[in-house]
Image 1: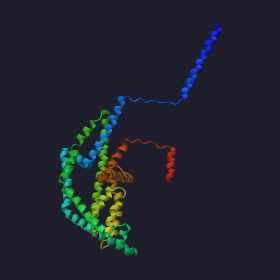
Image 2: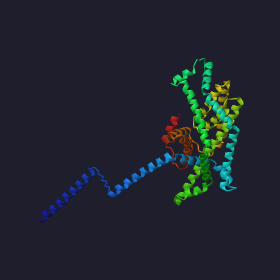
Image 3: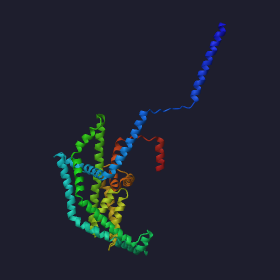
Image 4: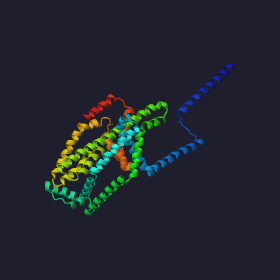
Length: 393
């Protein structure tokens, strides 16, 4: 009986072991189901966070819509302050930084005033004549094309191909003239706007070390070194880019103005300013856009060879600039790929209009400078290197 009883116990133990194994196997084969239980407090907390994010988004949109002009002025003042930072830093070694900032700003204002006194009346007069003669310039270009290539194209043919009436051209020219002079009048006459820009620029430049110290104090001690480094790199590279573009634009405008005036090109002053500014501040295609207008004016003038001379001058100047002084002036600035710069201008214009287009390249330069310092780069594997080399070949 004892043996039978022992056999029964063993049999029960084996049966229980088999049952446990079967249960564990079933648990492995069964799909894993995760249950997430939201407590009432978590639901309310999540809802409040979502509402807070939406409220911040609406507040940000409201600020951009109603205070966009002020934000744009502050951004422009910031870039102006970091652009003139090298000069201010040099003078600040011998005098208070506020005095150095005033001297630099007064020097810039004196240069602008001298230009307005010397060339202001001539610029306005030539610009007005140029706008009024846009239809005549079109006729002159068509006449040169017909004479050179033995064609008989009329202005009406060109306008009809674009579904434009002749009266529309005159109306557009008149509106353009009104808008140009209206814009110039608003800029010159808006004393408050100029004063606001100058005031922001002065305080940002004069108090830049103090502002840097205040920003660094917003972060823990272990992160303050990184913040200070980011600030310095941003100011140096972005300021270098803006400063380099301004210097190159001045050089291009002055040299182009001298050449245009010597050959007797009509409207030489506004065309020289157009050439210098557009060539330096419109990425990738700026050089070509800048030279098209003076060439057209030259071809449509009494001496069509002026257009050829302008084209030859532009090609020579571009090569001399690329080889000589442009690398030296832009050495301290971040190198922005032309395609990236052009894309950033398009994106900035689409998002924020003219202000976005103007600030797109400096902001991109700042981001690229930070990416070059703090971005992670890894060595290419042998397979990837071989594939790239084969595609290049």
